[in-house]
Length: 447
Image (cartoon, rainbow, N blue to C red; front, side):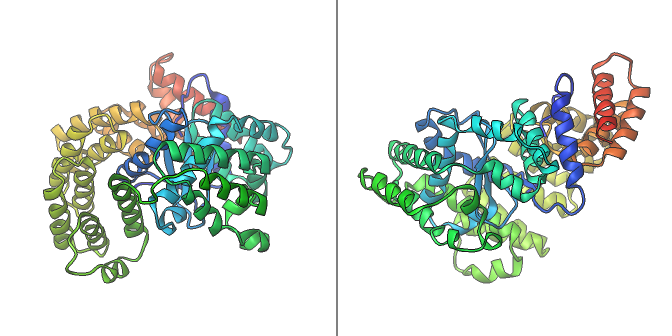
């Protein structure tokens, strides 16, 4: 598991938004996006039938995870649905998670995002400015950068920005029930989710989960949702594929975020299903107990030899267990099975950098450039790419990528230093030089 897609030329406004936000939240900002190829794939599989029913492309709407134990989900633009990790780990059925996805998809499909942009334009405080800038980033197609902006703003302004009217909520519920029924998911699960929050509005603001604050709940809304659910006759049991991917996402998330000793105590020794094998592998890896971790991940791979995310997990275990050569083999197998996945490419590049031979360094540069071409939102990937450029003798590009990484993480002074260095080393007017100038202009404007 790993924790802003920036088109540097021509979207300086978006870059200003990004660095403004991250600079406000640089020290001690606990919320972050969890990037894990296996979890994102599992959530994508759950979302696919819902998004298709909503008339949205599953290939264009990402399901991304916020590392936050509270219960919430939200959308900022039409390209991503954000779900808090606490919601994934605390619901009991795949249909409940699909109900949340259906509701947020309805906000996209029903055009509710336009009002939010107007709200942001009316903001005048510093926190409101952060939300206004998030809209600019979202307009650039940069979903994750926009998320960082919104999360970096003051909580009161954030709630106001994300808040939906009751009419929007009713509309989203009605559409969500229709999407769920069309996808073969019982809309009663939507009522089950709303029941979780039924008592939240009676609590003080500080004790409520964010979902109750950003999604107003009333008796009338809950009554209407029950009526929508009653209007459809859908089997309540989830199909086997949905249940598998739900359990896999929840299990992997809880195994990485929870106490490893507790995870192992909760698993029965006699159990050997795929989900348990994955949980054991992660828990032993985190202890660390490399031998038992490898025994369990190998048992999982024996059952799912063509699962790229199982091979990726083995690569992570091996790499963090200080065996980069073996990790390269596992990551390469994962990439062979899913050759266009940027997170898998980034993992392979990281292992090649750690291997640190002349051949592996050359290969690392190629792989990491591919990863960056598909997803520039990974600071860790940018760090590895900078190392690969440096070992290749290209100090100008190494400085540029380092500057971009610092900009993404809010270290504007460091970003400016490295961008100026890149400006002096790269050919004037080249693509790299222009990217360096964008960082310089933006960082200077933000100071």
